[in-house]
Length: 137
Image (cartoon, rainbow, N blue to C red; front, top):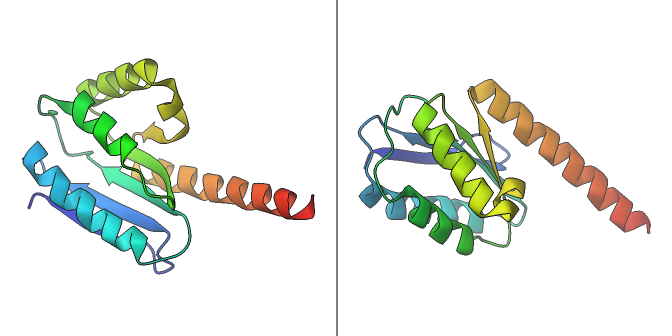
């Protein structure tokens, strides 16, 4: 398989998907299932970082596959941050989030792993603040 799936942190709050340069859509269902298995093994929200920074092309059919994954989200699935510098991937991302505006609250795009990690950290902080506010009301 051309997509590596693993925990990014010891706390099991981030699933990392590392895409090889020669990945194919046929590898995505297995990678998605492995990621879901990790998420189902814990009872807290899990964010995902999808690292495609070494990928220079996106195979055809991305929008329909992406839409299918959005419809099949788990209850404890948090945000998904995509790490890429690919102009094609950025164009597809903008097209997708324009066609499906709610996706802007689920999917994010960064150019570096450090930016992705910071975005996940900030989201966790905001999530914690919201949970505290809800508990106090």
